[in-house]
Image (cartoon, rainbow, N blue to C red; front, top):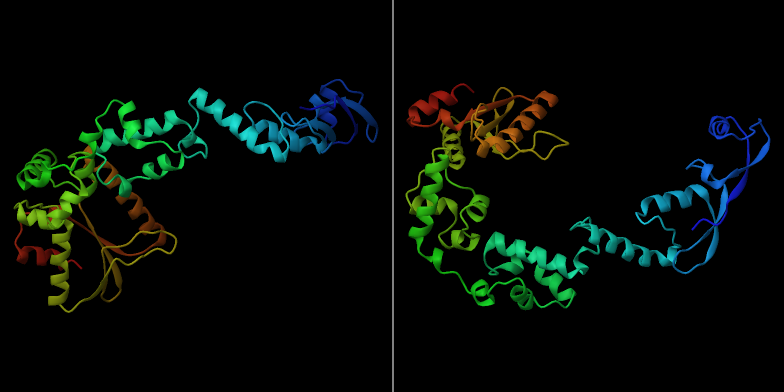
Length: 329
């Protein structure tokens, strides 16, 4: 709380317009009395302020107090030692308005937030199996002495159903059926993330069969857009023609991008193998192509030579025809 009502200030050309507009008898070099409410937010005038919590009175610069109260949605001033009380009140106010963010320190101190996040986790994964590896929720519940099982019951779920080990995907025909359905819809096989999010197949079940590449072989699921296969063809071509090459090099000093291959011919050239053509506007591929365009922009920005190869160039072709494509190098 600001106790000072008026202060004496010295007139100068920096405050001339402000105080003339407010009706003060401004005169260069003259000292005049003004209301604190008419001061500039950057004024260094000294004022008396009282802490809202401990009631201690201190003298502070007006601009310091102004900035502190501006940041406080409750419009209160607190001294340094009472800052934790103010932070607690602000968090409570934000929580009541639904403005408290998940990243803020006091978010997890509210039971309703912990329940909300637990419910979101259950809806996403459908099980608590592997929760300790995928989320920090168990640790958070432990810190706040909040029993996870009691929370599950409070949310209306069955603890037994959520904690039992799922046997559904132990049958590989179920996984194969899911992946074939995905491929029929999107003309490609799902990524790890899509297996988890869209098909509800956990990483544990994918790894049980040796990972995605093993699954493709085991289930006889050929993916013509599989860049792993395309990269293997390019390695074979380089080796047969005695071309020196490296993989996953970083062409740019200030960007974390990596090229698929770097071939050392008469000059160094980077090679990018793109999964989808640039004119593919399918929603499922839109995010991929946005990243591709950004990467190509950086290549142009640094004036670095590179060659683009698209997976469609390799489809339904023999290795002999594919080799002819590589000769464009």
